[in-house]
Image 1: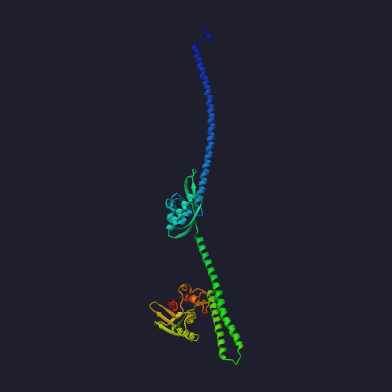
Image 2: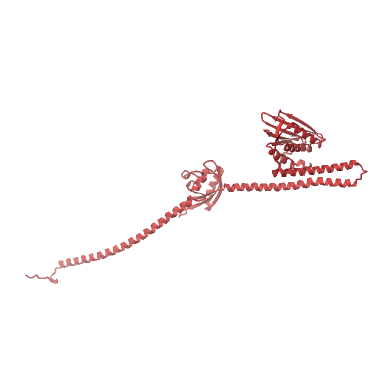
Length: 427
């Protein structure tokens, strides 16, 4: 039995439709495979691109982390204090040096206002204005303050603050650098002291020139005039006139000698050539001897000496004390009218283990405005211009008394006289 193949003409419309549908499915399947292959290829490319992007991001992240670590190290190990503040002035972050400057742990500092460590209310107000100006001007601002550490010590600091804004231009935080300028302040003070001393030295030089030109000129003029007049006299003329001029010469030479002694004494003191060499001696006998020596040059003055207390022996440098007492007696004589009495009093107090010497005159006194300067070199009171002197005597006495661990003081009234006190302890 043979099989008969149908011809195309034998297909029905239905069968033809099914065949075409099957053909389309086959073609669609082939197309889908190609698309899938293309999609898979595209996916691989995208995956590769993603991996490249991920590597880039990972590199950026590592670089960022490294930069952050470097920035953190720069911040933490900066040589000066570094504070990050919010708009209220509270501490958001602080580096190691800033923590050391205030002597407080970083954790305890964060959240606290920086202003609480400023030493005074006035400077706290200035710091507030400092922040205000910083916001208004948006430029670096500086201010100097005193900051108080945890242990209570105070140091001088200079603040340099700047304002940081975000990408939108809004306030982000303040960066505040803190410099310890205590050493600079100390150096500045030393410089001021040095300049003050230089100024004082220049003033002393001016006083010396003024004093020397006056004190040397007067006796030298007297000597020259007396010698000139002596040459005019012959041996037969009155000896009284000759003696008068000779005495003028002697007095002038003595005055010059006293000036030179003052200069020499001051120079020796300042060079450390004069030393304090105490010894035990009888104070009463010592003062009586000084008075007797002084009387020869002051025949028109009288002296009164009083001693109180049981103690008579003292342990002091006898030579230095003699210079001081002799000079004070000389001043009392110089500034007191003739026939007035110079009073000397020595009193010892066993219960207080001290003694003092007081020398009182009835002279011109010291003006009130001149009293604070009376022990300065080359200083002379306004009412003493007509009296011979260098303005060194009281300065030398004060230095010598200080060298002997004593002190000198005085009271004085115009035209009623002065009293100078020399006080010593444990002598």
